[in-house]
Image (cartoon, rainbow, N blue to C red; front, side):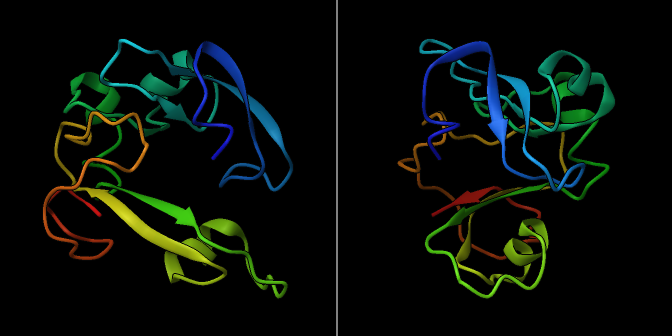
Length: 143
């Protein structure tokens, strides 16, 4: 959470683990004060991640290849938050989140379309919309 909820422009952010690495590493992301499509969270540095289809999060219904290279290919995108951590970690964080285990909760979803989340709260969790309908919903929602 602290990695995301600060202000930065092409700034180095620490990723504890991901689908590409179990070890911590850094990637360049964006969360600017006057850009409603931010934050841009990517698997690696923002610039090469956009054409590679490695954008993980964006807002304000932003489209372009930021969305079209990701959302239709991956059946949309989900946002999980970790409410608490279990001492018994039996699988990686991505699998634990998808299974709703180890303190993870699904809080936001965008379907397999061509635009990112309608939210403009910069991932603060204050925008509420849609009806929570699980990790495969075709509709966007946020709780």
